[in-house]
Image (cartoon, rainbow, N blue to C red):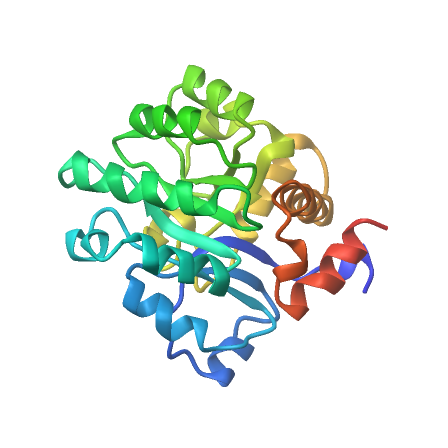
Length: 254
């Protein structure tokens, strides 16, 4: 594989754990961080072996029943079974206390473990950063982060990465350091603004960033892979990624 042959990369999308092989084939080789929303979904996903999908352990903060299922034993099992922990975090739609307890328990379970985190922060960006300052993790991705410029700077200083999509504003994208930026679709959410027809469909984002920066879309994608390689190096999670990721990461580093 050469850099010009790199497949689409999507660092945050939702795919049902009963997805079929033909449906995965329909993603055109895209490499996807497949987030789950509940521990039940995550258990089902952990039984799969998909070379182009890395399945996350999720307890979405907007789902109180999912948050209530987070406990130390389940998290220990999740860290062994999943290279990615997500989607989890904080959300204004629900009591902050249980969400924060679940997030803190997750970060404690992930301490010094080779995992990547994909964290949700809708309406509670300040509170999320307060937790991360106390419990930093080198493999943290802030998904669709809409914090202030000061909060973006603070998150960057904490070593966080950012997964971004075409639904975000130009001003927001301009505030995020290019070398900390990863692509996402958050499929199936907000398809009218992300313009993603399926997981891995990051074409609109790549085109937009290419036009902004005066480079071609191949260079944008290559930059994403090099950022991912850096994230996986600092987190120690590269060896845990599915087979399909390794050839692309190797090609990006040529």
